[in-house]
Amino acid sequence: MYLSDYHTHCSLSFDSKTPVEDMVRAGIAQGLQEMCLTDHVDLFRPRETAHWEHDFSNREETFARADQAADGKIIVRRGIELGEAMRDFAYADELLSRLPELDFVIGSQHQLSEKYDWNDLYFMPEATEQEAREQIADYLTLVLETAKWGKFSVLGHLTLPLRYMNENHGMHMSFDGFEDEVAQVFRALIENGCGIECNVNRGNTPLPDAKWLRLYHELSGEIITIGTDAHTPEFVGMRARETQELLKSCGLNYVCTFEKKKPVFHKI
Image (tube, rainbow, N blue to C red; front, side, top):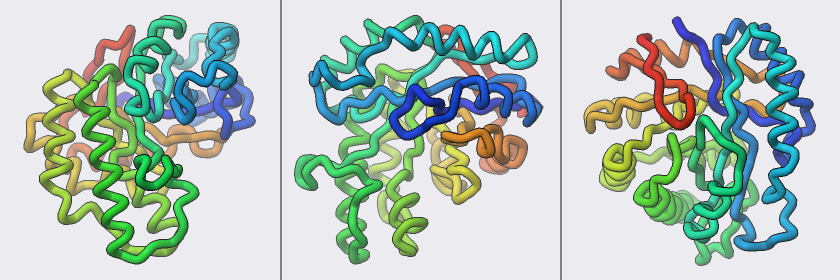
């Protein structure tokens, strides 16, 4: 079994203080063959030149430190998590052209639309079930726009709203009833040669879970990565084996890694 973690963050991300060396050493300790650094590049404030995340001068140096820490014991790929590209697709294209050469790009959505003042899902207040369903519908509209744009490797944590609705607010929401919308997203991704991520969600319910993984398979989706979304060392590589078994139970026979933005398929 080829073990990988394709969603990790270090101190390059605004929400992590962990040195990249510690993340890499954690990957080695977990027995991973490969991991990818996917620090945030977000368009929360499009074309705001003072936004520090759009200064990429320290990325190469951080990647070099990661390679040194790996010491030949683990493959460390170069990636980013590109958030909120739909705020300005032209600017997202520009950012991708300015970044160092990458192996992998996660396309992700963390915000709701202008209707909700572009509020981050993390900060959304507790809602009624009807309000939560309206938020999910809003979110999926933005995700579909991103999927149709398709300038990334995989779509990150498709069912992300459930992390905050259920884990933070104690709700019992699901994406049930949004089968057509999710299928539209999957078809757009597949048409553009993109895949999806199975986000281990730091040990909580995977994003997406089995129902949607099966639908992805039924629609002939093949490209899928496993990522923990680790921002600290203790989550790196979490449930790597169990998640591969989940994928297999949903009909998916391969897990992917990436090199120079090309998928590499590993038999489960």
